[in-house]
Length: 93
Image (cartoon, rainbow, N blue to C red):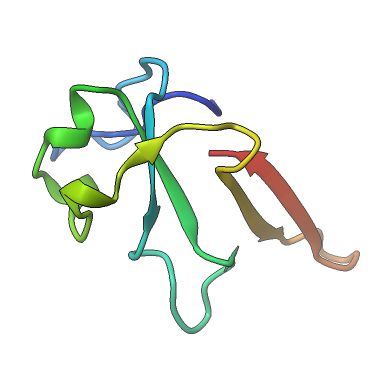
């Protein structure tokens, strides 16, 4: 689902917007000890959803949105491949 808006209104888990992403912002939520995200997480939003104040945009700053670029806004995470070694996966936000 890369390159699409992933905003989800409260109570609608799994029902992301899905419109083409126009904006991206480094999301502060997934960072921290024990996080499987490598280097944080980029959130992608459409023109409408970047302005919502629901939980999916909690911690986002209105002035920090930047134009979405699939080559720059990539998310990397560790995939568990047990019993094999973990694998680093990188995908556009």
